[in-house]
Length: 197
Image 1 (tube, rainbow, N blue to C red):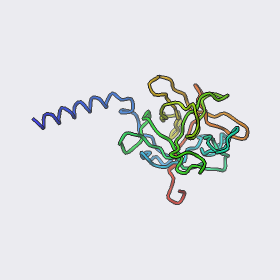
Image 2 (cartoon, rainbow, N blue to C red):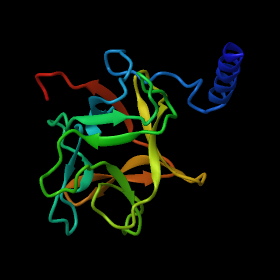
Image 3 (cartoon, one colour):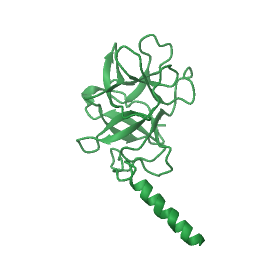
Image 4 (cartoon, rainbow, N blue to C red):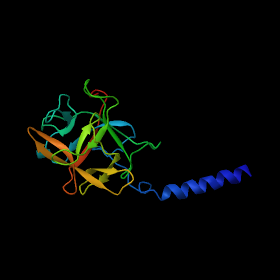
């Protein structure tokens, strides 16, 4: 009887998980073609170098602490970003709910500090670090781009079908990350080596 119960649970679990959107999605790979490890640290950079360097954080507007997620200048690789999913799986798939967080944050930032989306700002929903009011409850996810090793970042609100692509908006000297309906920022992932950390 016990064996039948376990087998029945296995069949139910397999059927349930096969209907989840990420269950048949592709594994996300880095610039070396290796799968992105759940909980691993990576540099995220635009595919087109003219757009800028890697993704980091900076002060924008009236911020006294650098809480804005930005594309840095062309000479900077950006800052290491931990890519993790609440699902206990080894590799990150496209369409999987994700938390994105810099491995090191400014001392003035609240901890733990993850990427969030903030509404009510002049140029629409903006990607910020934890510490702002009017944050949107949701998840980031990765979608395959049209170029090899290129991907799009997307943010979807929980309990709604409202999603937006992560793109850029020029704000002063910075290219801040914002949500857009079109024109997503195409990015690649480069694994952070121990010497870089």
